[in-house]
Image (cartoon, rainbow, N blue to C red; front, side, top):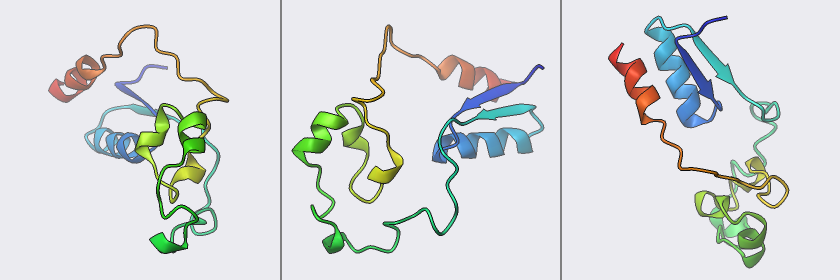
Length: 108
């Protein structure tokens, strides 16, 4: 199959990109490998106040050890949605440059 755009990840940016591109008429493929999140029941921290978290939303030393790359992007409220970097190491062999793909699609 041929696609005009392939989006990796259905997070806030990927989901929005897929929506916008498909609404513009591009044949869009959205790939996701995360678990199925059920609206309402799979958001254990959604209604919690900052003072209800054990570390008041602060990053811990354990977080920095287990999530050396990702710990700067989350706090205790969103931590359940991240996998441990130690279990799935982030390996970058050369710098990623995706702006050409985005620009190519936007200029079409």
